[in-house]
Image (cartoon, rainbow, N blue to C red; front, top):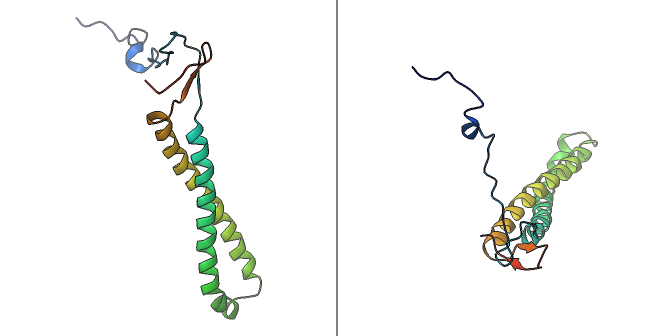
Length: 128
């Protein structure tokens, strides 16, 4: 007869005993490791700037093309709405650029740069 279901018996299956991948220093074996993430930070900053500039240039192109028709067809208060839309577009573009740049920077950190620093012996090393 099968044993009754016991949740404490199945902890490993349901994640209570998650295996956390601890990075240790290959030189001294210390688990006191700091992650630098330089490329991730720089990629996020560059991506944010590129996203904002791209969104603003797209808004400027659309605004210049539609400005003549908008002034003829709508009330004079409508340019405020287009400025608001341009600012919101720049924020969204910046957020998307930041996410993309940070993801690319994380790949560079993990594959190319010595992203980990041992706080015990000051040894820098790549992700194992």
